[in-house]
Image (cartoon, rainbow, N blue to C red; front, side):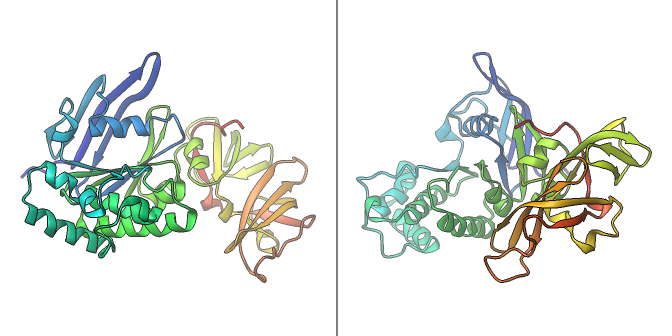
Length: 360
């Protein structure tokens, strides 16, 4: 018995624009029913990758398969894809029903089929009763639901989401993240999402592919990548991290902050240690931790469920960022600026990463 093919596979994909290598020998396999996010800064190659999957760009080399079928040189309208864009791309002169039915009409579906499927999709995206409205009469969130319904009504083999929530305000964006994710899981639709928003990727994805310089630096479940970043870039791009660079001396890493205990033995003589802000312990609870550091609170910021602190370490001037769950009245921070505190973290909460801290 052979394993079922991936819903979407990219093999050794390369794409150059002049002298710029936009995508460099990229490999990716998306399993059926999974949502995978391409996450990275502007210029990392994520949008170019999506456009090659869609057929809007052709790779210079490599292969793209959908459901085991080679579609590398196939026209976009032959690939069986659905697409949702940041700009919605709705037809302003067509009603909601006409927008949703567009793909079915182009495929030659009967009027009855179009009506039935439009009714089903509008019910699914909670827009029943708005069939005869025009896009200009809808809110941004409603327009995005129409765009999603139009993409899903044709039962696509893969749903492509290109920064689909970027034009929405924060509260609506978070609400739509849950709605799209719930619908994608319920319908078991395979999806590829392009985003630069870390929270969006974390909350919506089965897997995240962190991209930089046209390559995938790390691919994995959101919690795995967050808890166990492999490189300094991933540690700082996906969330915030304190990075300590230094030389290995026995079971310690000699850094500007001091001799820090290592969670494992690194391969070389130098190493970089990543510690997430929420793993940093401040105050008396840090007194028994092995780092033996002390610092002064130089900045404090209330952020709702937690407070963020900048701590300057004694003797070195190294600045550490620490998050502490809110334990005082809302709008207040429990540690005042100027307070001197012990600083540390459980050794096992440090992670060894490759590469140096990105320069500001």
